[in-house]
Length: 491
Image (tube, rainbow, N blue to C red):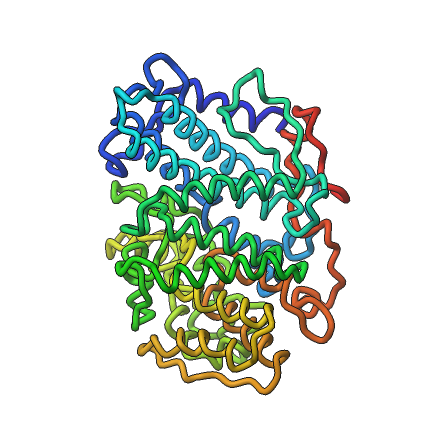
């Protein structure tokens, strides 16, 4: 594995363009050559399209989210993640790192190349909007690196922050030290604040928008502020969530029918930002192993059900919560196995597995979205933020019940809680049942929500949390070849 990451990234620079077909009208460019340098408006737009094209595959979807679900303890699908027993040599943590930095390389190429264009080539307004889109995408990539490989929960002075890059990787800048946690948030927020000020309102979930920049910043503040009980961060997050709820584009809204949400996939009005796959015959391949194959072939409950067996859909914890929830028969169901020779059906999370790798092609349904953010999360975040910033139980319940009232299929009756502890337990379950394996929400909630005087992740696993193990180690290829970079402790 010695130099795998560098070979991939540098090969990306040398080979020209990465095709994303009709994602934009132009091919995306992010290789620094005389032919591919950004010299026109069409190439500027294509460079932005090149960033979106890098989100295809497993690491921007099922691989990462199923690893996070395993970390939380709700499932044991990735045992090393459930046990938090990964090391510098672990393959599963190396693969997302490579994908994340490939995406970051594309974002930096776009941002820096567009920013250098003269006013004779691109208008100031167009330039500012495209740079804002690129910086929002860069913030999204850096956020995922921070959440998965850094001490995102720690104080500002903690030295295990981002291996931050704002330029295209080349042989001269491979060696680079990490920045602190505080500096990491500052850099990400600088990009997001620029995006909030200059991006247009939501039009399509295939692209980032002003609203997405706002909710990404709100999530960063909530995850860290909720873990540390930091009032300043929590109040900032609440202000952002309230602004989106009050001023969002009409095209972004809750839908009444949950089954229809998942049927429509990235075309649902509930999706603020989702991983989109071109309909070019490669959707199942680019959808990734875990959503298209693993959930139906390995993780689900084999059908017909064996005597005395239970339909768990692979859950290790929380099944009793989900079985009582009206969403269970909507988000789970039978999916055909992913091999041509295996006609077995397994009960699994159909909301992301859909019809599976084989039958999906037969019925022409391969819309394997990764749901980076859906509208219901606004209500879940607001409910939690009200509770964490001194609001009453009734005040915190209000947005949660408003969310539930907007569903008519299935009908979700209003919830009640006598105490704040009761409410927080109820909300933790709601985050799990609404967002499980979509975007890592249940993992981060298991770290900041408490029960019985412990973090939920400790209650679920009946094991004391080793804080340094929350994140993955920096992979061996980076740690071995980048002598300026310091590895995470206890790895």
